[in-house]
Image 1 (cartoon, protein in one colour):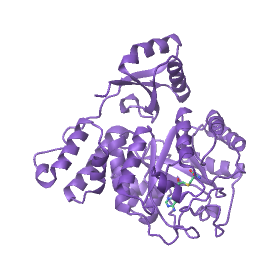
Image 2 (cartoon, protein in one colour):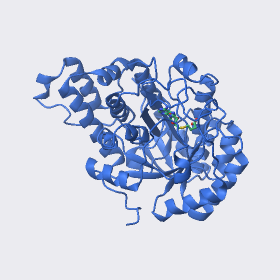
Image 3 (tube, helix red, strand yellow):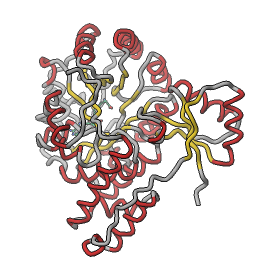
Image 4 (tube, helix red, strand yellow):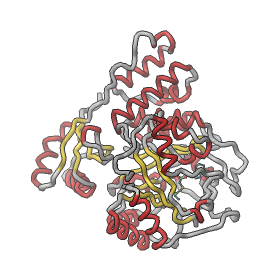
Length: 428
Ligand code: SAH
């Protein structure tokens, strides 16, 4: 049996890193994991220690005078009442066993994750979605989290085969926003009350780390908003500079954990480097975002199950799951798009396995069907990212074709239809 563990939650990421470093320097084994639901509403990182190290850890924290919010037992999340008398008649015994494990808060095995990703039995599917919805409610609540995204450059050095802005695609008109243009959009986002901005781009050398760091400081000074970066692979050093200048979150999707598949879709990519980047981000105290693409050619249900287990094992905090959508001018332009149902099912199973995480109802889903974002919010998702890129550039950030416009109206529509509440920080 696994040893009992405790989660140490600090006031902010700097304090959390200090706790982690202090313990590690004194020979205590730690892990960084999503903070438990009972520690408060902010999605934060906690330092995990096993029971036998707890007293030693406490006295070290006390001696070094680090202020912490609290220490919480790493409890299994129990869900009473998933199984009623009637359900046994319409589901298999294998499914009942999986439900029992979910009720008890036990970790699911790969084959069990594969089962719930692929079952075609109506009652089982219905139960999976209801369970994901309930776990979403009990871990992150009923309030939709709304964030604003600025796609500030579509220049990219990479050759990702699925992505419409890869460097080989001559069919895209390239653009790069400058600081002042970005700050104008920041003001708009801030004015409507949004608290987190996502800065996304291709891997654009002209937007150097120093330049980004300056921009981050400027945004922090002006608005105090939380900043999510999604600018691709960088060195540990660069990630550290960006963190110190004020970035809070980082979104770097693994896309697929199947190395063969990863190598196939990323001709100039390095799987181990991508993994390493994600570990660095975690070590540096970023709220760590990952995710995958559903429906890349050759991907199996088993691959998806392994992705979900990876998100859990890595302690990922934000998980972006979107269907593959072909992009003109790429090697994958004539392939069919990923399946909406499988994307929704992956979100639901990710919620069941990973519990307290942010799962966006992705733009890619919205691009396939106006109502798909509603379905995602009923299947475990809890976040919507608005596209705030200026109109004149928007159509050029064509990572895939017919990218939908997700604006505040679309988010409000989705929240209302899914029965989620709008956040109180929105003005009007
Ligand atoms: N350069 C950054 C941002 C990439 S764009 C980085 O490397 O992290 C953000 C996400 O869009 C990618 O992580 C990928 O999952 C998704 N994406 C790109 N092309 C796509 C396509 N054709 N279909 C579906 N998702 C795609």
